[in-house]
Length: 184
Image 1 (spheres, rainbow, N blue to C red):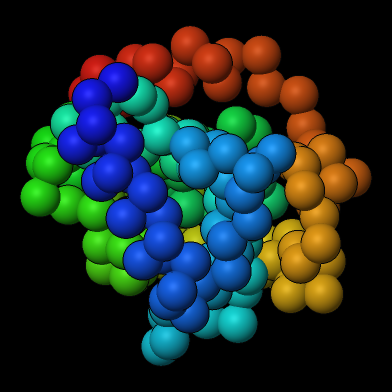
Image 2 (image 1 turned 30 degrees about the vertical axis):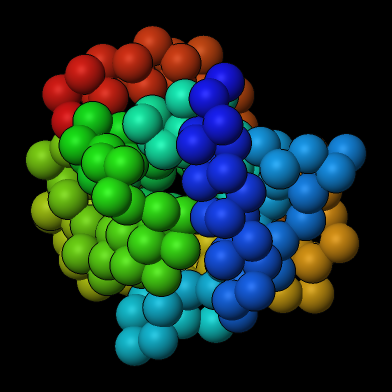
């Protein structure tokens, strides 16, 4: 790990910690932490709160952060079971010019405001968004009410603790993740 990568990682994490986001380091490691993320105002996700797991490789900022939602969210570009995000700017088009604050202040809010049904993980969400927008909106709000309540999210540290009591088994999810990511 180069000294400049290490300094940049520390700077980016510190900027995120000094912002309005709640950041919790895992075992005091600057490369493995969670962030509490609030749904953007004037969106279907407004009022919802999610905990996201962030991992930074030794090559960060030259390689993108790995970010997953820990509590469930209904969105075409987020896998409901794994929390993986299908977003080009994080997965394939990442630039060292971007930083963690960009991800949480710009990229993720934009993703929630403007889902891309042509590059997604959640086929149910894609189908509802493209065929029955009213039912899609209702399902998003239902998931927010069930899985994204601040009182349930704050203090929970892993996916099993956060609104997973209604989890369904989807054995094809991992293979879908790879094919959907390859398309994105």
